[in-house]
Length: 318
Image: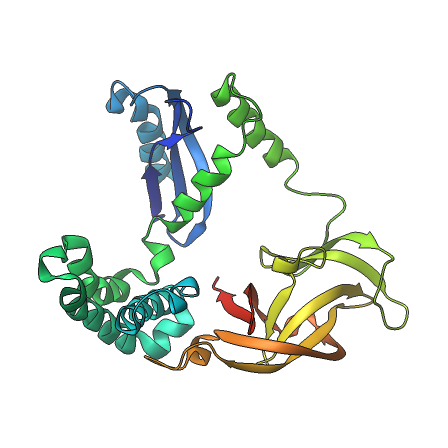
């Protein structure tokens, strides 16, 4: 049996117009982050008859089945409210990653229970909505469905934004979107890209820094995650030995390597309700000497936020 996830939502194309698109998005339950468009409608109001709008997709689906951030808050809110928010943030982080779920699922459940109980004290019991109270039952859902990406709308919401960016002008947005999707399908495989298992690299350059004689590239794609030495936000990674590296070159000889500098100091961003380092969340500073690492040593991409006291890092969970 093949299980699929389906999402239908409206998306305004601009603030100055009531024009909207209504895409039908689909992904396999076994691979929920791979979202594809199976149908799309454009208009200035909701589709007149949802059944007519969906009938073609439903028929195809039947045939198919039958035949085969926590940073800015630190200085701006009271400590009790900040800690309460961290409880929610940490629990969501844990429930978004299978490895964390195996280790810390019970702890995340306690955090969400505490968040809901403390929410009433901080903001008033009358403000505990069904959505807030429902957080207590997330643990049970995780046991049945797995991590958030397997049953949440996260992947669909992310994909909606990419659809919104496809039209290049206001006229005929539906036709433009369909055309762009077909173009992306044709150019999915690029001749410039060289595949090696789950790794690929592109944009050769000669700018250094480089040890010995290696071919240099600007971009590395590791299991669909992009590292780009030309973009500060895309140049940090967390290594399997627990270090954070700023990648400054991508080198290829027989194997693929990243060349960069390791942060000499890394500390917990917060110590409560648990050490942030448990979830690979750090504040780091002071880059050391250059070193070279195999691409196999990369565990996560790190999202960086620049603050006066250093770089604040969060792992990109995937």
